[in-house]
Length: 520
Image (cartoon, rainbow, N blue to C red):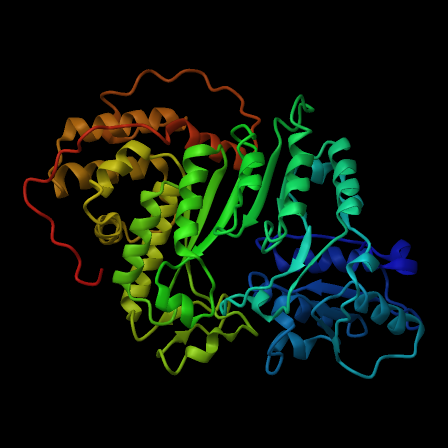
């Protein structure tokens, strides 16, 4: 929108959620376009991603049926690679692959004024970043008050991890920092407080990272009532935190900084296989420092299903990462994004992927299809139990002492919960309390009073107000609810901070040993 140039005044921007009814979206767009006229060319551009491909394809089909003369242009990562055979590409009039800031306005101008373009697929021009208009003035006051604001300090990535589309980049390009900071200052003055930097490698250039961090540190203080506090998210290279960067990070109070650290795998052979460069010793040292010496909220990523990585190898990596105590561990399953080199391992490692979005791996030579399904369930339960921050005390009992595998303990519970409920969604905190109590006290033969005490403390700290069966005899009388104005991300961080360093003491062990799963 910011780069539409002479066409900007004739352009309208609209956003929709994927849960919205497609017919409603089509009707709204057709209403914006108004009545069709033979001499009037109308152009609709759609961003297509892995998560909205199916819905967008259905929308394009509806729009083309209702208004055949409408020119539909596609862009985005899902239609920038492997276009052959894609239904949505066949339905559309044009596709802009790659960067769109220059090529999309040019295409629109040609469609409206001529000469009409002859090619259906247009390779997007990559201009110098200095020639791209920054989009941040386009954020509305409603955006500033209620949404994370996506920010680019740089574009591209110098690393070649084969599961990532950024592996196709030759390098990373940084936006002019003075221009970017001026735009951020304008956003801040307008009331913006929630920023998410989408750079793949925020701390690649330390001088730039220091200036950006200092910009936000200088602005800590009183804020408007609709934005309770400053929140800034960065994707950080885990093995690249020099001392001068640590010195600035250590100055931030709790609740401001969130770092996403892509660990992905600790298996050195798998790292080599997928062209991933990672200094393991430095990564571990930096994680320990962030946990022990900073107030950063840490979100670490692991990927399951990488070529040649077994369940046992992944379990060892999970246990190593968990021992470092990041606030959240995102357990993702490998996806074969269009254009990424990861597919070159398909034959060698017997990798089978779903043919429909999100192209998740179904099996490899190291992990059978049934175990892929088991892991998908485990990842969902882990998000409810671990990443939510609601079950710190009871999770410590579930996962057992450090000398045992936490992953294996989690897998046993996951298998039991699935057999018990056949659910991975719709499990309320109250249902989880009851299931955890039953599993720990009956299946694991851990002292019931000890389990109930931990679950009670977790449940009260979480702020939940219903009455699980397992806690009805010990729950205090509920107090009147108070209105919370904290945004979801900050509330989640506060939940983790409130219970992160609780010490439970020795956990009573089951009366009979529980065998480890052979798969792990």
